[in-house]
Figure (cartoon, rainbow, N blue to C red):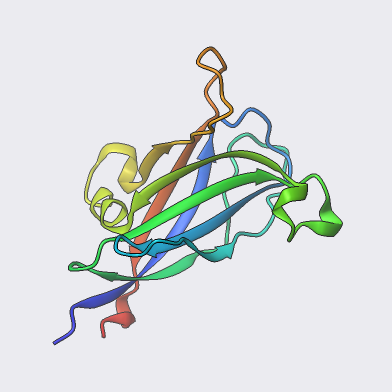
Length: 146
């Protein structure tokens, strides 16, 4: 019997420095893989908010025996016409976690089941204000038990 299930990830951020036209790009890999695979991109959150919430969810296969790592990068879209081209956009920061962390965070009362991760950016100087936080909610898809 295959104990895998489908997990739907929802994403939001808190406390970004600026917040117009933000987008989250999701990458995923198994811990045994070398390379991250781009998994998908949220819609552009057009509201002027430092607390963007994205509608688009990402479904990932969750299996206890495989460590699936997820990386989320946050960008501000500077060039709408070329929003596919990440080199044209402003990179805000990223966070990494494994899928199990997000699934287990759900049973915790802290943050109402959301997994909280600090956004990191190598260009950030120690005295710079924090970049913001990523929140991830992992919902198991009920009909997706394989």
